[in-house]
Length: 374
Image (tube, rainbow, N blue to C red):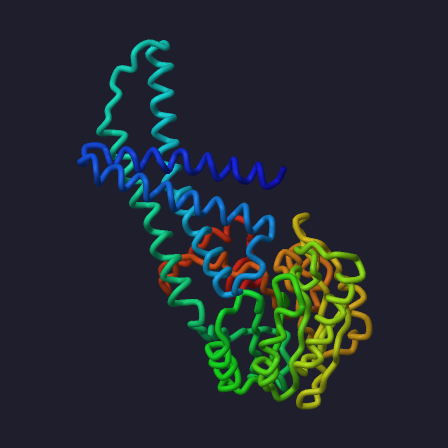
């Protein structure tokens, strides 16, 4: 039923997008117009077959990288069509208003040129995500970038001034297609000579085995005082159908063991108090906690805080940033710094330093990228 509803939704998108393509083609010679529409139909049918096939596991035996790129292409295709369809739906609404105004009589003032204009605008707007997301998929996937943030924290002990933390998050190793570029990312981390490295969840998409090919890459991360990690919502195997509950449990246990193999100290609603320059730094780590009902909560900050009363400074690792406003600020003001991941900035957006930073993520998450202070 979910697949059927999803296909109906995609069909509605396609209906409106097709109107735009058909409108654009009016006035063309018969052969190029028909070729244009047939090409649209063939690509659309192929996309629907892939959606149906993926839902029924038809392509599991295919090469993983082929599946990753096909899935991305299909998403880009329908997202771009959606942007086009919005303008055609607006044009339909305009015509409906004219129909009502004219008391269900002949539609006066209807203009094909106006519909053609809406189709052209829709095509222009739809081409933006099509071009930019395709570019991002092919060019930006492994263009790792270091974001530097110097934090001014009044409660920071003088002995910790200048402490260098590197945070990485949301590896989602099942989405990797190549290994060498990832090694370049690890080299970037080590070149920063971090005092501490924090990983804030989502090692995999659904299965712990996704990480197997990359163990000999991520185990090269080095940090003076250690590497500490927590789990994210994807790490529990909740987004996959397992043959039995025991299989899911074994997967989860294996995922936790991977952190150990990597040399990462996985914090499961617990903490570590380490000494740096005779100062006690408490690192708290919770399992996934979310203020959104869409994501399961497994964490317990009260448990993770036990035994940290004597610490001079506290840092919390919590995968989902909604946890910060929902609980940390309200009840744990002694936690000076919380580090999260999860949102990915929705994978795309626009950023011009000093001018604009925008992503659709901001409409779902209040805190979706960069530093926030309360």
